[in-house]
Length: 311
Image 1 (spheres, rainbow, N blue to C red):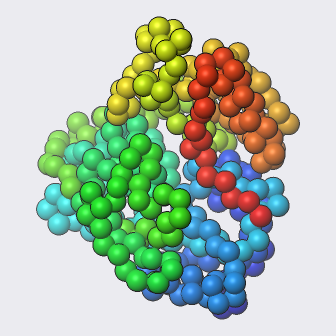
Image 2: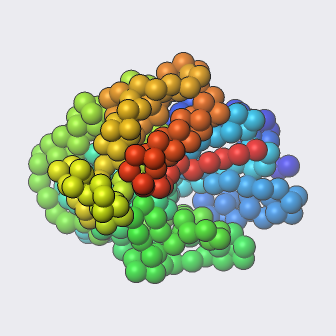
């Protein structure tokens, strides 16, 4: 089909370095190209998957038998303290821009991987901050009607690591977003960003391919009464009281447990790392094990942050 590449390995697009080939692949650099790609996929009755930075994806070993659409919409435009940012812009590139321009508000995202589109869709957050905190509007395309949508912050229905765009049954592709920031000292902004990056390097197993936290942290209110005294000293605010899932996994005795080439990180057990040419099946086995053991020990059903891409 026109503009579509064929049989493209997806492991190079995933932070996990795991995944088979896509039947078709296309990078779309603007809204028109996104709409055209979706239209062509539908005309051929092809499934399609929208790829961002690949930082939370577990791609099947057999790949994806459809179209992988990567919105490569890269622009940052400034108007006063407001930035208009394309979905394909890397979070790291946006942070470098805010440092250069002396705009404060996103320092919490230092070291956060992925693209703006993915951050908006999943309301990415860390260190008490969330993407939604500075969003003004989000522009998207309705993949059913191919109509342009423009939503303000409340209409995006942001929640804990979620949004309107991530809800089941939604079929909208984020194109760009506006961020409302405030003037700040470039040196102080840089220092704050670098502190977050250093923290991640020190505490997270960045020496191995990974996709960040596998599970969401657990809202403190969801911990069964029988276990609340046990976890009260580890509760943190992110952005509301939560129990770190890493603590639960550690208490379940799962640090360092491996399956094939994948391992539950001893450094941060909410990371499953690719230590030796892991396959998706290896990671899935460890995810199932963690959920089972934490449920047995704490009576808690863990919720994955992982997005699965299957053939």
